[in-house]
Structures are given as C-alpha cells and as structure tokens.
Length: 129
Image (cartoon, rainbow, N blue to C red; front, side, top):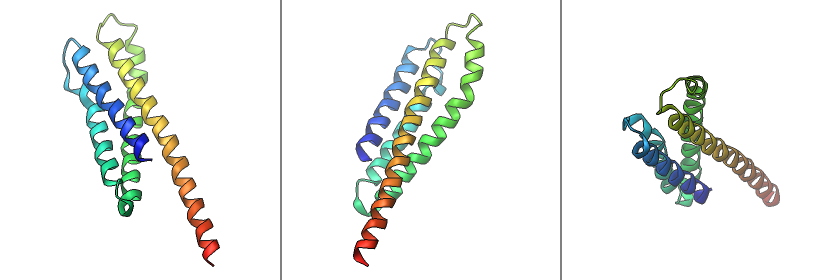
C-alpha cells in the first residue's frame, strides 16, 4: 500500500497547487488537497518501515477519510453555486470532486488491503498451530 499512498499523495499535492495557481483569487483553501497529500506522504514514509507499516497506512486511510468527508460535504453547495455567474466556482467544484474521487479510490484500496492482511495473518496463525 506504500505505492498507492505515495501516488495518491502526489496527485493531491498537484491538484492543490494547480487549483491554487489556476484560481483568480489565489485562495489559501485551494491548497487543502496539497496539505492532505503532504500528510498522506508523511504517513507513507512512516509506513515504509515494516515495523510501523500498519500505523502509517491507517494514518493515511484516516487522512483520506477526512479528505473525502470534507470534499463531499462541500460538493452539493458548490454544485448549487455553479448556477451563479461566479467564474471561480467551476474550478472549485472540479477540484473538490477530484479530491473526493481520489480519496474514495484510496479508501477502497486501503480497506481491501487491510482485509487481505487480516486474512493472511489468520492463515499464518492457523499454519503455525
């Protein structure tokens, strides 16, 4: 799960920076995906050691859940505001939607990985018995 975590982190960092640079107002909130990506990258580096892999990957999953929740909560308001003539809102909506999608996909991979690791540990315990 280290590689998917790093790839998701890079995608979120790039999304935040591109959203910030593309907006006309340069709002600091456009960098939220970048901060989330940075936290996920730190989690991946923590999980790079075999001893702390579970901790790092669970931390990354929590950050992805926070990102998904935050982005998903804002999507309906941004979608409704798209009907207004504000030029920055389509960009904000697109960034929020991409952040929600990236976090959701990562969470699916993380949950599958956690379940697979649990099954593997059970099978190893049975073999040793």
